[in-house]
Length: 452
Image 1 (cartoon, rainbow, N blue to C red):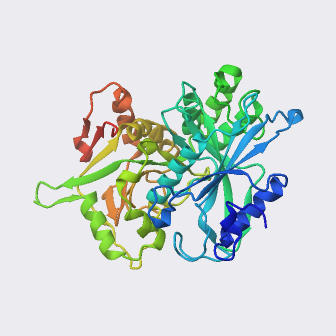
Image 2: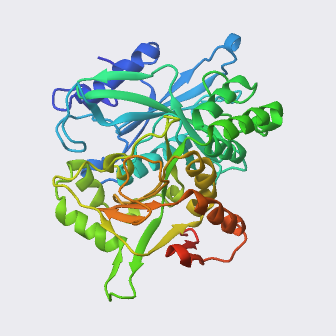
Image 3: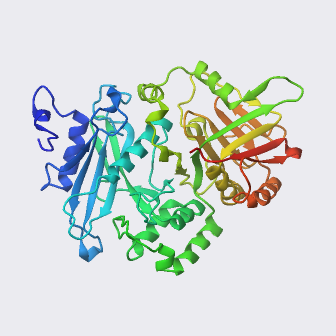
């Protein structure tokens, strides 16, 4: 059977769950000589009230391949983002024709240091933090996505302080009795590489990293001792990135942020806000699935403080892809049709990191006729900026601000993009909180400091 976690796991009283066993067999195909890898185990399982969503993280020794420039490394594989049990205790019950749980598991490849005989365990803490973010925000991680971390992944002085996501080159996508599971590999990157991914797109930066000696090789093995960015190793790469940004714009269609909004109508004493609309949405749609209930009943104290970093999703369609309620909020379509409510004025609030990405959204997305969404880290609240050419929106020039459940849409006319962009150029220097006002458009924006 393989992969016993302890002696009791193989007994009839405590068999290995079916979904977990299927994933173990997939790993065994890759590592047949390591049937009992070292594991980091959640002492109290998440579904029993524990803080860690991942039940297990296996750690394999991978010899690499010198001929292919793949160094020896440790290969970490998570178990828990997909459905391991199939009985509804964590994820909504599904079948083989659907995604299992969130539809993915995390992996990470860490360069093995000379003389190292056992894998470091710090990657498990990073993977658990990412899993907490996924469970609490219900934003899945996909190839091309990134996470801004602002701290070396191993808490050292390393320049590797952020992450990009790609499909694991050995594991790919697998089928289990409860649906498909894609193994998403975490790739450690420097700040300059993250910025390039934001300005252009993650998959292209990933491809460039594969081609640069010392940046991870074809399997993108993270080397925490890497002291140079791909642009310092090969200066010609910057030109390729600049050309891509100029011709294609950005694939960055949205970020997870700390955001809110409110409307104050001087002719009406009622003050409408994102909080009141979220309460309305909860009253309309009480059909949250089991995993939503499990997560939302969790205390905020269980969250890792470094989860203030952002996970980012990408629009892989270079053309003007249509929006939908589900694509922007991450929530299922409501049971009854929600009519848009048009607002006369709008006041937005964004955390600093989200605000710093707004000029990128204006230049790299809206200028190219594409939308951009800020998705709140908790709940379904989403704020989407659109231009007149974006399909699937409710807003018009006569009614530029509209709310549908937790989804706020803001129309930015082409002639207004440059005006906002110009005013935000001093954002990194202003004292926070700082409010920008555009009275002619009845819109204001407050940027607040990051939470401690």
